[in-house]
Amino acid sequence: MKTLEHIQSYKKKIGIIHDNYASSDSAFLGISYANKLVELTDIEPYLFYKNLPNPVIPPACSMMNVFDVWGFDGLTIALDLDSADALIKCVGPTRKVLYAWDLEWLRPNKKDFLQNVRIYRGIEKLVCRSDEHRNALSKYCNRDDIEVIEDFNLFEFCKRYTNFGVK
Image (cartoon, rainbow, N blue to C red; front, side, top):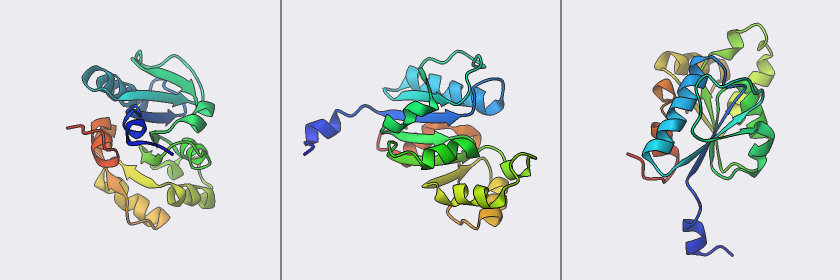
């Protein structure tokens, strides 16, 4: 049985899963916000990757293969459909969020409507970049509880989905 002291001793952790952290806007903002969390808070960000090229900027936190996310016990945010699919199937993370950076179904390699909708509907929280993305996603996957957080602001994720006390 877990005691109050045991529960309070949990570290404040947030995980981000991305295909890779090479040159892209989402990789840059993901690492930048993770570095700011390290610098300004006591929250420990973890970057999970599927492919490991050189990161677009040096991270000030741990980087691990996506296979290690099964044992992670904090808020975990996927930044693409494939990462979200892996996250849905994983038992470890306590909160599972997909941040829809792009409207991925418009890309040539993401045309499987049934699989895409299964992921969009199967994730605990679906968050996107703008009201325009929310409207398009809502129509595509018939989900009305989509939230908006602009530019992948990790501080806003912490405010909404954790009890870390971030301002």
